[in-house]
Structures are given as C-alpha cells and as structure tokens.
Length: 446
Image (cartoon, rainbow, N blue to C red; front, side):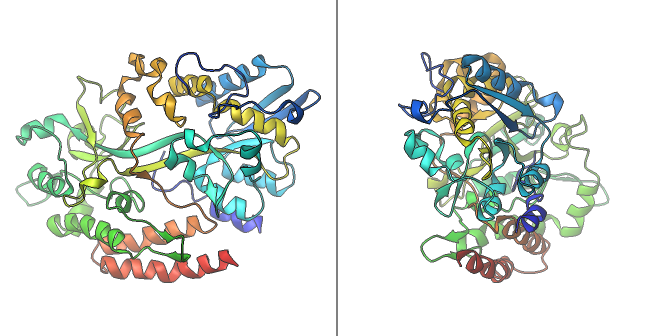
C-alpha cells in the first residue's frame, strides 16, 4: 500500500509552485489554545531525544533550525535533532521502512494519501486532550489538514494565491490608471495591453490565465467552485462554477489564438531573472503569490499588486483565492509521539510563528499573529502586509484532502489543457474528469 502511495506523493503540491500579540506566552509548549501546554502527566517522564525532518535545503534551513534551537533552550526534557532536505520520497521511504522521524514537515497534499495508508498519526485525540483550538488557525489552512473528517497535521506556514501582480509601466503606456477589479475588466485590460508586430505576431500580452502553469484549483475557487459533495460523496468537477472557470480562461485563447499564444510563450524570458516577462512587460499581469517579486513590488518598485478580480455578478467572491500550507505531522510509528506533539505545539506558539515568519518572510497560520506589531511594524516585511490582510478573507479556500487527491489534480490539469486549446468544451472536459475520479472516490469510501 505504502509503495503505491510513494509513487503518487511525488506529484507535489497542487496549483502552486514553489503567533499572539505582545505579552504572548513564551512557554515551549504554547499553542493557539488558552490552555495550550501539554498536561504534566502526559509529558515525557524522562529526558528524550526526538528527530524532526523538514524539506528545506541547507541554504534555507536557518529559520527553522533557529526555532528548533529555541525549543531546545526553553526546556530540558526534550532535545530535538533536526535533519533537512528530506522531501516526500525520503520521508515516505523511512515511514515505509518502519524507521520514521518523530515529527516531519511536508506539503499538505501528502497527508491524504499517507493518512489513508496508515502512515500518519491522527491528531484529534491530542487536540482534545490539550484543548488545542483549531479555530485559532487560519480556517482554510487548517481545513487542508483534515482527511475523512479527522486531522492529521498542523499547518506551520502557508502560501497564498489571491493577488494580481502587474507591470506599472505597461499600464501607464496603455493609459490604464489602476488594476482591474472584475474578471470582465481583466479581459478588457488584456486586450488593451496586448501588442503585435507588423507580421501580426504577439509581442506583448496583457494576461495569460494558464501562465506559468495551469491553475486547476485557483480558477474554480475564483468562481466559487468546489470538487466534492461531502453529503453525497460524489465528485463535482463538472459543477457550473468549475466549468465557467475553464470557459473564462478559454476566452483568452479564442481572442488571441491558440497557435499565436503558443508561439508567444516560447519566446518569453526565464522566470525569476531580469528577463522575467512580468518585469520586462512582455506580460503585463499575472497571478501572484507572496513569494513572487518581493523587491520589485515595493512602493516605488516597477510592479503593483491588487486583489485578484472576481466575477462581475459575484461580488460576494471578493478576496477569493487559494491556500497551500506546509504541514507538520507525526508518523504513525514514531517512537516518541508525545514529545513530538509538544514540539508541534511550540511551532504553533505566537513567538515561534512571528520569529519564523520574520526570518523566512512567509505568511504565518496563527490568525492573531497576522496583526502582531512585531510583523506589522517591521518595514522589512512591508511587502507582506497586504498578504497578511488577505489571509483573513473567508473566501480563501483550497482543494479537499483525500487519498486520491493527486490523481484528481492530474486529471483536472490534463482535461483543462485540452479545453483551453479548443480540443473539447469545458463541460466535456469536466465530465471526463468526473468519470475518471468517481470510481476512485467510491473505492476510497469502502
């Protein structure tokens, strides 16, 4: 069972790449709950050493290693030994071999398949025992930790796609005074920002809905879509909102041409370099995440940001977007689960969340920390302040976590691509996904 899960887990996180206020408790076991510390009777009675695996490479591991060191310093019963650069394949190989770490950090979408395979410890009993307040965590991030109604992890950090990033000069040259507010305006702006050479070839485009990749989760969320009917157990890729999301993206290919766009894409500069198409103005707008263009989107920088547009007839969807958390979990066969749980609670303390968010420039998941002065008055984090605000929006959602999540996402991408290129209708594409995924959902219920 675990070997087949291993093959699916390497597909990666979907649709994306790559804390209390003053006076908060500094206890190493502080968590979002009012009575967050592990009960004395449940703490390890003797000194214990636990292992913690994370995914960051050596050059990026400083912030998490600092939190491990802080935890080790604040108490003398548990010593955490940390090992980095442990991706999903390495983690699941260790779990399958019966020698897992005590606690590990992974992408959220691994929890569904791993939990179903019996590789991850259910956390609900721990939450109940220590009054861990799941409501204190950003809801959309916490919900991604749930598989079949039970929690199997805690979201340590999260990434968020709910932003439109745009090239200020391109807007100025086109006579546009500010970003579009609705999706209808987004398409109109795209037409005004698109340029062709004398031969009719696209040289600049306003927006590409599937750049840099097909966002098979982001777009349906913008339209208010969803993928599973929890009441009936039926998958719903072909519900109207999901189909509308693909049909909207298809309009760009109808307007500018499949072949013309393909040729244009082949000439785009490399992302993350000075030739990045958003920086050069080849592409005037794109879906943005908090880690994109941190320097360039400063107040006087070349890029601007705005909430991503919403459907004109659905103002209730303002602020919609996608969350993608990193999950901390305890493997089922961990040797020291109680000590691992105590360390996990520390990672969700206000101090740990603030310190890690500051050092790594990420979005914390403990809701009250989003307004912590240590973040809000730190000018080095100013490009994240808008993202802290947007992280509070109730329209932020994500894909449901389940055993067949990676297959579901793969089918969505495959059929969506065909629809965008005009090889099938949006409805036919999503009907095909439903036909492929429903047997997987039925099997998962047995």
